[in-house]
View 1: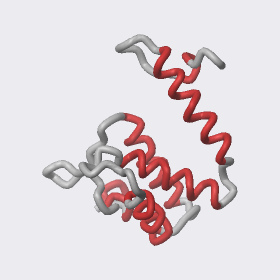
View 2: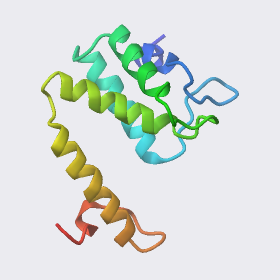
View 3: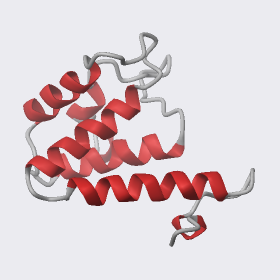
View 4: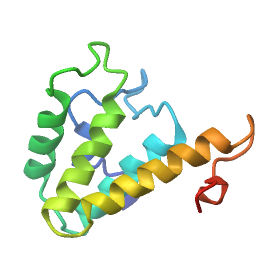
Length: 123
């Protein structure tokens, strides 16, 4: 088995949507990117598997989360943001500013076109 075929511990995250073959399923490209970023940061040693599991679990069990799991990757991004902020790697206000910029860009992007930060009218 090559290094590319070794399943990451993160691929075993509780509640991670999977195909019938067991591969992670991502509802949108951004979810796959968040997954990949998390795997990369974990492999670089920024956080331990147990820390990731605790943080993700805490997010998944917040009041008001979707019963059907449709907000799973929103929880994923919130958990990743929490870890990055708690370690001083990212600033919470910078994360919020970027989230708002992406939202404005999405709203300003014509249907069928790629969403880019350059589409944010405030940039």
